[in-house]
Length: 167
Image (cartoon, rainbow, N blue to C red; front, side, top):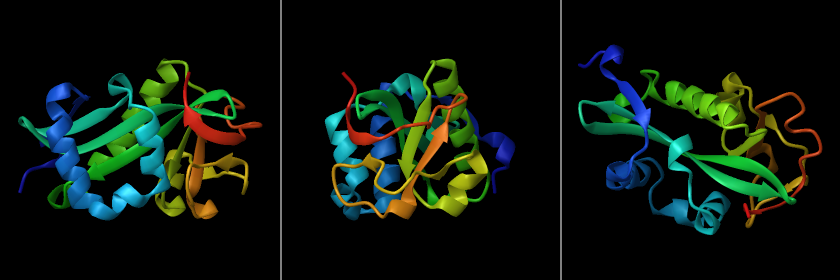
């Protein structure tokens, strides 16, 4: 078994695309294409400079992407997908990728990030449920799974409206 210290982290690069798609297929299966978060990713490309991979040697074992979006005309990010290959789960790669993504977003001057996910897991990173009905995704979403993270003081204050591509 490889040790946690064998995992290194890097900004996403074009050569990681196929591996990231494979990891997402493993993690989420074909049902991921029916999700509202996928509709957002179809509207707007992710930002590679705000997205990261976990590597062992040259092998991608995890990834997180961030998509620049607009919520009611206000710039924000949508985090996702976050995925780690099954054999590497529970070793901290997902947590490290989450922290890298938030740090990069803050350094880029972003104010807020949203995601669709499990509140108990994402709470450890500061995500909290958004007020029900405040953020409208392009498809049905369980409102308890629509979470937000303020990247600066007041970053989530008044965040409301329809999610769309950033212009």
